[in-house]
Amino acid sequence: MKKSILALGILLAGAAFVPATSSAAQSGLSWGGDLRVRLVNWDEIPIARGNSDLNQWQYHRTRTRVWGQYNFSPNLAVKGRLVNEFWDHSSDKPTGQPAESKEFPSEVVVDNLYIDVKNLLGGKLSLRLGRQDMIYGTGKMILDGTPEDGSRTIYFNAVKAQYKAGNKLSIDLIGAMNKNEDEFAINSQSRNLSPNDIDESLAGIYIKKGHANYPFEAYYLYKGEDDVSTANNDIDLHTFGVRLMPKISKSLSANLEVAYQSGEMDNDVITDIGGVMVDAKLAYKLPVAPAIKPVVDVSYYYLSGDDSDTTTENEAFWQVFGRWSQFKELAVYSMVASNNVNGTNQLRTGPAWWSNISVPSVGLKMAVTDKGNLDLRAHWMMADEDDGNGTGTNRGLYLTSKLKYNFTKAISSHLVYEFLNPGDYYADGTINSHFIRTELMYKF
Image (tube, rainbow, N blue to C red; front, side):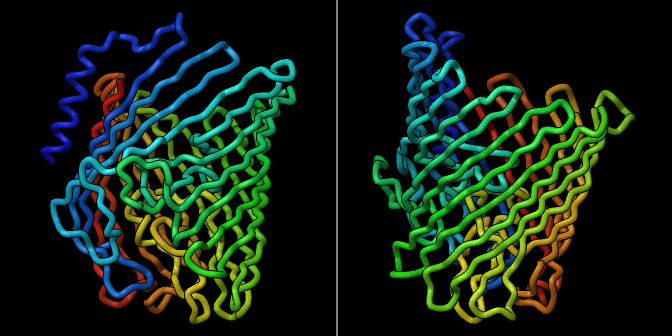
């Protein structure tokens, strides 16, 4: 904790001597950074398959980032960003947590480094080349290229070309390749960036069509996984999807995303992969209490699980690059996919490896002040297939809450509390789980 406070003090003091704008418009140079300090506490988070739960653990994590950008012209720019994150443990790490060091000063990583080229082909084509963040849609398919380091980084080593075809139609061609470890990390701690010692590649097309009432997206994504730890278990995966976002009225809106997968695994047991995803939401702006702007929604999220009756097929939905805390944090571990398929260990597993879930939920969002908002949600967590260490498919009642508050434009915070009352998907005797996180973010 002392290191976190020291880092915050140094950056705040340094920022006091920075001019109100840290950019030099005439030279084309701009720069900035941020500091994020988190305090995390969890207790008794169940694992679907494992010898024990993740028992009580408390730690601080402090992330610092600094970025710089130089505009050679309105059509050509280069941007880079460095990141460092270290952890202070107030209690022993639970069994199964990674052993690599995250203590100060930890690694310094080139988080972003890319070139932007704009206004090619009469303003219709733009290119981004290099290490970059990429988020598409709601992040169910493409958001985090480096999931094993948590929220420290999310980058892709990528090439992205966007063509604007007119009438609010854009077509993105993307290609990326990420290694399991960052070969260029300074003070390298050999931290894994992808699950199960795999190198990952991505190629695809993502189409977006804007419309006042009926915007939509469609995509095809190829993902390759190279298992560097074994001679097999390599994967070729094809994902086809469409997302509809109708605005039914001023108060009522919807979201529906459906995706289908097919692929092959270079494996002696599992050869064929096929999965389905459905993500649906109906949101309504309540015509009451306009000062707090309440919005209620009902949602359903489905990822197919593996059918134990098939021997050479794996029907579980396979992650593309959607391994992030989609449900908030506690579920990152409690909803981990089974590591056992037909008596073998063929399925990728690890934190936020989403599959085999069927989740109806209801949520409420509201403003609590002009600077803060509250997000509440109740999930009825189910499993598509009974592959847990319990007797059924009921994962349990999962409640999440998040309070966000902006002190100033530069300083923001949030408080997260989550609760899981586990069902019969888990072993008999599994007890209630809790997760708490506080965050302070400073940007300069």
